[in-house]
Length: 296
Ligand SMILES: [Zn+2]
Image (tube, rainbow, N blue to C red; front, side, top):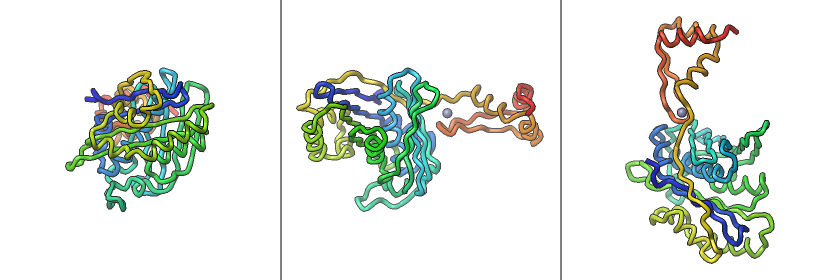
């Protein structure tokens, strides 16, 4: 799994353009299975994860992470996704089983499922305070919202395109996209060339539908702008949860609350939000955890 999922980090026009091209079908399919999501939620979560992976790939430090949180008044209610600089991503929707009619283009209505609300971006770069930016959702379609975030919050002219296509039986057929950014000092001419190219290009969904990969889409978009592939970063869905971390979380509720759990006499099952992994703790284990817990 994940063999083909990767991001190309690209520069063009002597570094005036920085771009990321991604394919991540297996990653999005993994999330679909982990959370048992309906198609519109698979598309929404998949787009957010795909965007987060590219933003993570743009970070420098080994331990740097970016968290994208969408909160909306639509039936999904919200989604949280975390990606790091090494190509790992995890994420979950608040409501995995949303079913709503297609939009007026006959496509999965991601914007309708997300609704109006906010997009928060939290970049943790190992400093005391993480960088946080928040913008209102423009359409809830995710790519537009990220493009707006870059313009409004980071003052970086960008174009983000994201696509998730489903098979008839609701598994993920293709997922991917790109993120193009203009570096400071790029002149008006570069901007207008890029805008022209973007306007004349078919949608990223159509490209993915034709089986185009990151390199094909890169050529389509940047062919006459001397694109240079700097590297190829493999990506995957990967959660950082573990039984040990779950034990620590249970211990942290304190002796009193643990005692009442034990008094109920039933084993407990703790579920990781991000990946859906279930950790079961039986009575003897709960007593062990009680011994390790503090009075509070
Ligand atoms: Zn997990």
